[in-house]
Image (tube, rainbow, N blue to C red; front, side):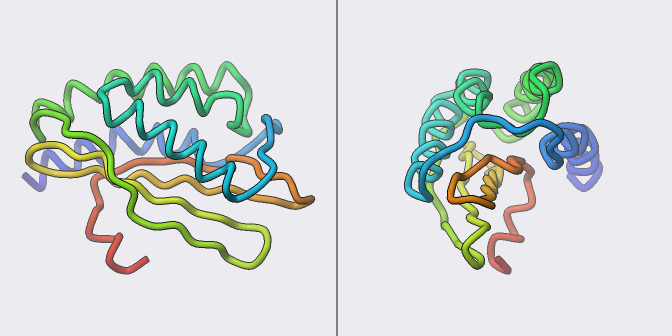
Length: 149
């Protein structure tokens, strides 16, 4: 199991890296509530087994060039069969928590549930002028970190 998790973590590292830093501003959201709703819509698709559909909902809000977003979506799609092979059938998504830090950062956490394990999904939104941007979105299998957040 540790070797598999390392392989999954390495494969997902590319996806996470591409999600982490912004180079171009995407569409904005008017409030934390709208940001939370976006995360909910993404996870409704992801939890129903439509990873690509969920990422396409988020696509206009990514703060990165469209070509990079397309690469991220394709790489994430390649990881899904690996995850399902190891973790079993997908069972849905579950809201875990939300948290604001100051007036500029807002985080929403979800679980993507499988029969044998769960994936942690983190959405981080940033606001410099009252509008919220999807600054980072990533997922991994480090659910134990949810207890320290």
